[in-house]
Length: 449
Image: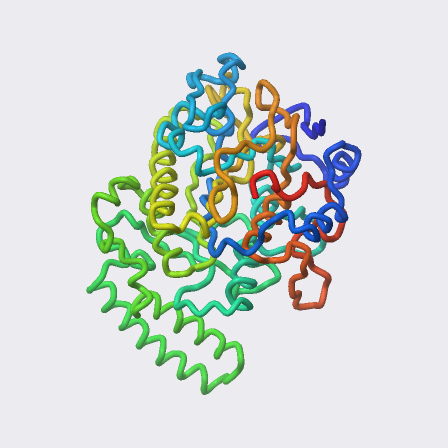
């Protein structure tokens, strides 16, 4: 099967050129053609339009696939480190990492993609590839999946919500321009702050005194803006006014109620975990209830070149609790059927542990084989798609490329993955690169749709 690994993997790892990657995909026995995609669409093999929202759990830095959803207990200590066990789930035949016991009880609600692959080990480029579902080098800076959803399900889809159609909880993703050529209106609105903090509001402000300060600041800005209009009354200023009004509405108006975490019972907040990630997941559920089409929960810190297992001992239980509570809560409220939940990072981490100095037990960047988890919105739970070898180093069955996943998500959202996007200079820009016919593809994820 397709093997695009470099011989050496360091901190940023090796990189496979776009041309080499495309050639490897074309020569492999795994590629689907544009005709295959169109044939699937014509025969109605995929039910589209079921999903209304997406919650993306973004593990910035790259989470370790072999310590989470693709454990390799037989690979030996040089690969497993102290995590030598895999634990059974509530789905016979599916095992996951030993640090995820709560998620193990909910495997019937999610599908594991174990054959995800792309050609770049650099944080910035890999983030771009996974977040946009495209390869760089087209001469166009493509928008993220969230920005496309904000456009298609938001501004062009009749979205009437008081909240922005694309919200990042709590910080922007960074490393790339999330709105790409779609411009600022499709940029994610970052809430800031910490939802676990008492009195959390948008922007991280505590009520009363914070609101008074904002009102004073708004009055000052109005005075400055009034003077500016006298100097230059142009369209740019008017556009800025509309964005300012929406931002102030979120902080001071009725829309702020969606961010009022104190409306939730303490018992439920404890179930999610009284930490930033857990409460961010709870906030994401609240935003789905308010009709927001795309929410990213940004949980970074996974770039573990050193002290990997010490970090995982702290981070994996937080992930386990928050992710499991989110799935259970969405299902209980009848929201999971219409909400796609995607757990992912820009790549995985090296299956081999680097015990030599200066790493002393670290895992480096690894794009060649890693895992993504999807649930809800039309994706079937209790499934595994793809397979890696005995050490988790190479995809040996059913590769999944980022655009295969984004195309599948678009399909479930009722967005045509073969459609086009508006470009300010009239360039031909497709929703997925498969439409242009120049990328290898494993095909839409029909096994779980």
